[in-house]
Length: 354
Image 1: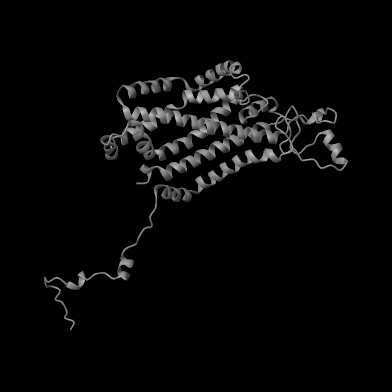
Image 2: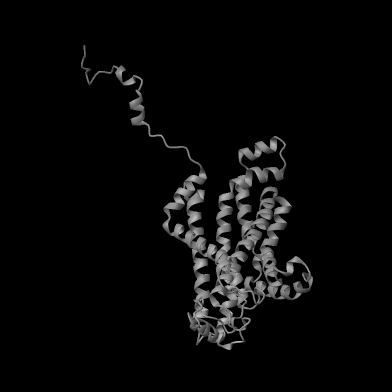
């Protein structure tokens, strides 16, 4: 018999403590599927439309710079007016977009199909589109490999300084302070100019000669000057992690410092390192571009976006688009990389997602 309980009674209602059924559990408990830090970060990154669009822009530009030269009928150093077996034709110089030289016009009248010069040609009669493509490839390659060099040096010095501390930390951080105190752009220009002159004879006859003294000097400049920010970032992360319980437990178990850094400290700050590296790439591309613009970049006739802009200055009033095209390309690359790096920081930085 169901007896109504007096609302003023102090007796406990036993029915409230009956075991919950499976339906009750499913209704009351909403189970969250298991996930990882990487999966959560990717979900947040995919919700950032600007970062996703920037990523696809970077991928399209990179793949185009790699794939297009294999199919393009013109070479980046090919002077079209000197095509054998036809006589030398000076009409190929300074062609406007989709214009043809006199020899090409004659061949087209004879029924031959000629691939157009989308961006025209430069003063030496070279197809400008393929030179922009090669220049993009060089700028991206220099930016990527320079960032890897900065990552390796900064990670090594920052982790050693942060973990061991004491005199080692004092000496390394004073070196960092000295490099920070140097005038950045002036030192880059001076080092690039000096290394350009001294590396030519040193690498002559070696496999490095194919890379070029200017490219190698750029990598040396990055290795000497641009690792300090990464080292400070890594040092700060290591200082906050080295007093954690798992690090003290590893020390108590007899683990050496190098093993602790590799197995515990670096994996726990990898997200911050990854984000900083992604943001370093556009800085490296910009540095390479302005050094090439000043004539301290890649060796001629290899093009770079900066050297293409420099070459375009001679005919800026008549062929302004030759300066505009590499400027737009380098701006698009740097902007896309910066926006994608900001998206990575927003998605994977633990301090922003607490």
